[in-house]
Image (cartoon, rainbow, N blue to C red; front, top):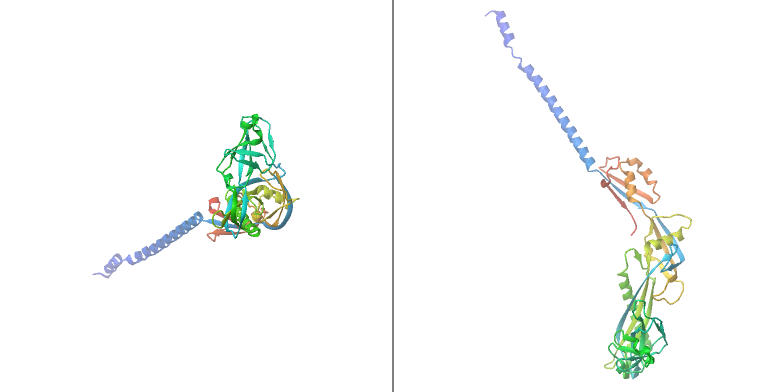
Length: 404
């Protein structure tokens, strides 16, 4: 075969595949790198997108708190004007009793006692009755009123006037004890008033006794009555506090307890005597916001202080300035309030949240400076690399450390 022809054949059949294969491999590697780069960018974008979606801010606020001593005399009224402090009066009565061992036997003479509601159906004029006015019971026995009283006249709608009065038996003895009775005023017998003035007892008439019975010494009686009084007062106080309306406060010393009646039932059989006490509890309720406003006016007379509350207002020491007798008809009271107050400034959480939406972290302190009710705050962003507060209020958790 000619040499030249062989060389031509070599040129023609000489394989070029290795060259082409190197080029294809380089392209494959480049494509793979690009694919990984795109995937990495996509994952990174998705990560940041999800981070933005789940981002949140937690802000803890420390409000302004000022401890201030307080000692002021105040006046309050049930029908107070806009400039005065109003109060509401809650009145509740109750009774309690205990048995005590009688030690000394002696002759005892006790008169039965009870209460009567008197009615005036005679006319529109009130009827005055003196102390010891005799009342004739439907059992044929006579009883007397313990105090002076006035029976109101007939009302405009025709309803009889009425008044409650305490009574006692004209004589000692168990025969005056009785279930509820009807009464006439004995002195009106033979006049037109006799049928128009009448009474009905409020419950049983009890305590009448005449004969030998075991008794207790005066000191034992005094101790027993003192214990019963304290127990009854505490029981009525709990009953009142359970019924206080929302927004009102009953200061622990803003109360008055009157011991209305003490009865000692003789030991007619055995040697156990029963001591029974009846009393009335008066509680002076204050609207907490109005009381706070009055106290703040006294504390800061030359400043306009708003949106504050007193966290320990119920710890104030209350004392009546006068010793006048308090009743359900009391219209005004003079009293003193004292104690170390903790005045707390309220934070407008809605406004603060609106003010910080979308702001940068570095501008947070400037916003806080516009709120004198805030002493300090702590801002925590999630995820940690965020440099701005979320623009959606739902992603902001705001907590104010108000004292309990």
